[in-house]
Amino acid sequence: MARRRQIYEGKAKILYEGPEPGTIIQYFKDDATAFNAQKKGQIAGKGVLNNRISEHIFTNLAAIGVPTHFMRRLNMREQLVRQVEIVPIEVVVRNVAAGTLTKRLGIEEGTQLPRTIIEYYYKDDALGDPLIADEHIACFGWASQEEMNDIADMAIRVNDFMSGMFAAIGIRLVDFKLEFGRIWENDYSRVILADEISPDSCRLWDIKSNKKLDKDRFRQDLGEEAEAYQEVARRLGLLNGES
Ligand code: C5P
Image (tube, rainbow, N blue to C red; front, side, top):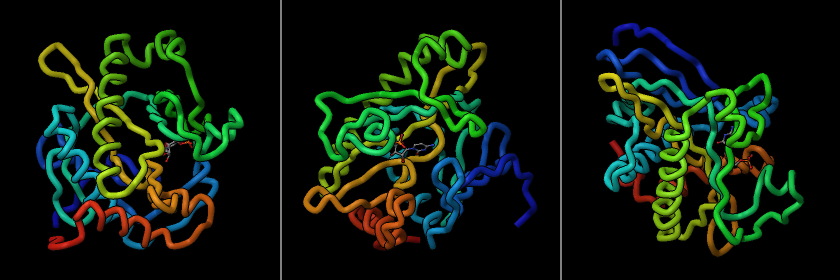
């Protein structure tokens, strides 16, 4: 394969220049990090599974009308996506209390939230991705009000779709993180769903046993990380006939 220009190396992915202008290749690594990269490790085969799981979810979201950067999967670890200007905001959607919500507000883990919460974090590793309010986004111009309306609408639609998709295979969608990117068409821009959706970016609990089937197994040293990711892919029907 011809050498490609690496654009960026993140904690779990590498981005390369794509074959056509305006395209990017996302390469999924097995590397796992937690607590703003203070904990580092590897989950064998994670990149292959996340590539496949994210493809599945993004393809299904496109089918219900959520615009995404996903174009096609290229091979076991790579997918072709549209180049976007990343909006520097991590959007977290929560249905059940877990993670930083339990720590910050003292809500017991596993508490079903009476309504879905959407939170925004400023994407900045050096600052540890701090929680922010709409006011900060408007004040510092990280996204326009119109973009934030579109982002919140898409986050709710993604939550509705994924909650149903996972419930159908015996998994509770506790929470997840989304990222969005801006694309320019003529003189207009719009925001579309970007990055990935996988057990790295979602909390997924078995509905019956509450077993964690996501990156919390790595964060909390619970073991059987690779098996958990495989279980999610298996239940989604992605392991049979895998090319
Ligand atoms: O840690 P916290 O409880 O705020 O995480 C909420 C959700 O967002 C979890 O599903 C977690 O996996 C995801 N997340 C992420 N990347 C981050 C922070 C959180 O994927 N940088």
